[in-house]
Image 1: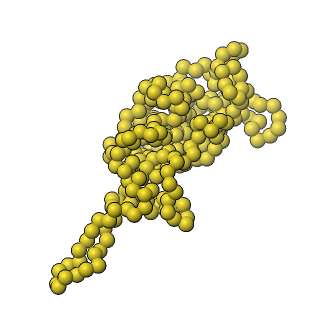
Image 2: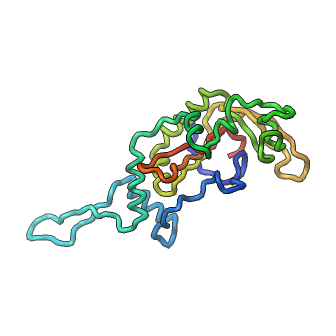
Image 3: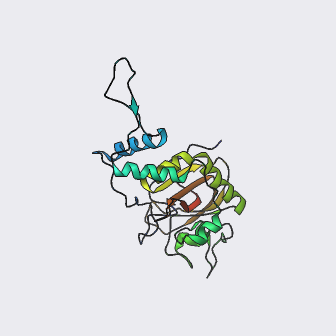
Length: 240
């Protein structure tokens, strides 16, 4: 049985973007009308997952029971989130990783973590180990670099995650425009390297390991109406 996914911050194999084109920054929606943003998001999530709140009417005529009404959210952010939530639908989508990457330039699961990438360092070749050192084909060195074992494991793991967590994903996309998570799949999903010197000032040292950990990021397609999502990246990791 897989562990419950948890959200994660920057660091590791896919750090915060150097050029601002790849991260999990909030969508440019109006801010929630709350003195505390987390409080506002919690309220909006309750509205999304529980339907429009019902309030008791103020008028009681004779012996009649109090009337009820379903108010339209007064705040435009809540209304906007509810619209996206409804458009995404109750049924989780099936993600075809190669097609996703072909359509969305920011997507890079196969590009950086695909099962066909060579593992061991080779001169003039883009490799998983070489990413630790910033070798050929990489923008710079990283502290972890991993690849999926094969296309079947990659496709199955991504889509099973989406199936299991669709309600959370749907709510995050409606409220923030993105969803990110890190979790233990409970079985091997890939292999790669950690930089053994990441916490010190010595030379970089790629240390091989297999892993059951997965990190994943999903975003709304900018400007899409009706709303739809795309997979930014999903990859095995050595550290969540």
